[in-house]
Picture: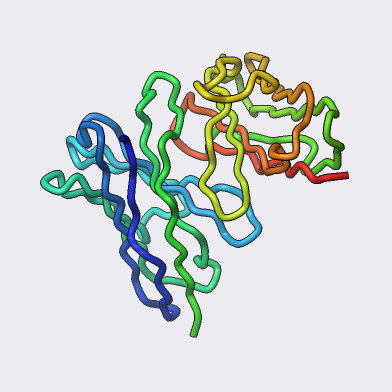
Length: 120
Length: 107
């Protein structure tokens, strides 16, 4: 079945960087964009950006330009989101999602989420 | 960027109640509007896409309507499993895409 499986939770110190991976299965990875969305504790959903797995082109939300980098490895159907200069307010669950219903722009399916905790 | 707002931010309701959540876009988005349900510790799940199309497997008590800038999600008869947070999402353009959410509490 179609699924996205993310890497496990991590604890990072302020100023460090983190990489979250998102491995796709059950569909053609290069045919659909992968989006990254984060959710701080008790807060709403914040769109971070997206990557076209075919071309590797990425688009970032303004809040993350210069700090987030989205890449992919098509050989293993995996997307990556690197976030640098971590601060305590980057503590959040990070989700990847793809858009199989491209015409509607629906985020479905989603990965299970990866908790990143930033603490000294 | 298109800004999305939702009202109310939270509501209390009882099982069997009819519940309506409103979503507004800062500019016209035609029917490029999707609704998600999120339960604690889980990823969001799509309920409605294209403003009014029910996702496969979603109960018929959920419905969506609207176009342009104003949209609604209606739960015709609230069930125990519907207590969750609901988000709207515009899919017309890249950028700020989600509304702030509406949390549905048990009364």
